[in-house]
Length: 217
Ligand code: AP5
Ligand code: MG
Ligand code: ZN
Image 1 (tube, protein in one colour):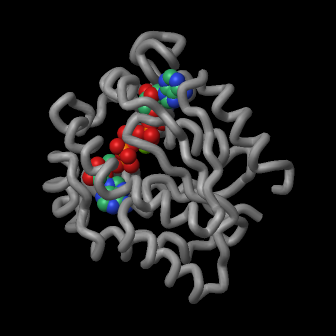
Image 2: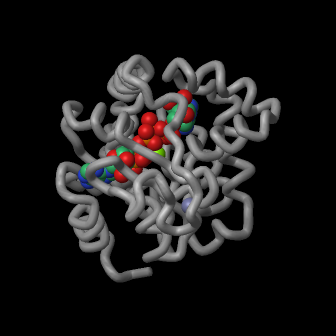
């Protein structure tokens, strides 16, 4: 059973790899970013609060985020393993996760770290398109849908994320370097980090991940 984290800068390919890993290992994919976007589109109290931060490329306060993850990890589909994408994003979230897992007797199997140069991230983010219905991700050059702007899987019209603009991206990158990169050192000390070269093609990144994770499902 695999209880994994996937880390990397904004646009590094966390969501893209997470959906491949989820299918391969049959584990729950938990993306705090996706959960906040769902809450925003439903205009729930959490969504309305989160929007103030997300629109500016800032982290949503830990009190909100930690509670969301804690509730999500208790759902049945996490019993066969999970992949957390976008959480923890600062040291205090990492400590909160340790407490949550310890209280349920769960151990992390590894932390996948997708390494990229900052230079490619703006293009990946600005060119990203997403299916609003089935959530499949695309890119206008590196992962084109068969028909322009139409989801291959369900036929819906693709959309662009509201926070995928050049101004917000630079804030997201700054937050990543200042607050999230230290989380990697936190897990390095525990010997959990699995570095992966995120500058390769999507399929080659996935091959490297599965090779390093091993067959043990
Ligand atoms: P979140 O949704 O997590 O956004 P992010 O970290 O900025 O990361 P992205 O989703 O933008 O990138 P990704 O790494 O998933 O890349 P993708 O696979 O899509 O968070 C959004 C916001 O929510 C945060 O800013 C914050 O406000 C809030 N939030 C979320 N979690 C929080 C937390 N824990 N605490 C507080 N606040 C939180 O790929 C990008 C594009 O590149 C795609 O188009 C893809 O097709 C393409 N691509 C992927 N891999 C490759 C490749 N190898 N080669 C070429 N193209 C590629
Ligand atoms: Mg993502
Ligand atoms: Zn779709």
